[in-house]
Length: 54
Image 1 (spheres, rainbow, N blue to C red):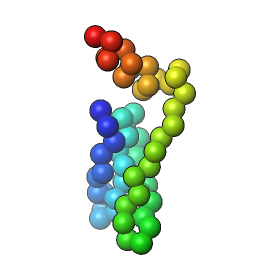
Image 2 (image 1 turned 60 degrees about the vertical axis):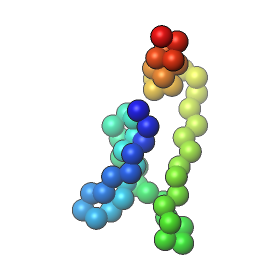
Image 3 (image 1 turned 45 degrees about the vertical axis):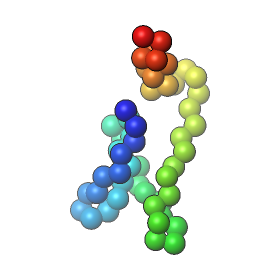
Image 4 (image 1 turned 30 degrees about the horizontal axis):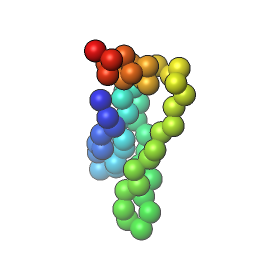
C-alpha cells in the first residue's frame, strides 16, 4: 500500500501505510510529495520485502 492524499475538514494530509496521517507540505500552492527513508529493519519495509518474495 502506498501513501494516499486525503482531505479532512478541507485540509490535505498524507495517509501513510501504517495508518498515520502526515500534514501536507505546500510550496507555491503545490503539494510536495514527501520521500520517506526507512531502515531495512523497519516494520513496513520488511512486510513489502516478504510480499515481493512470494
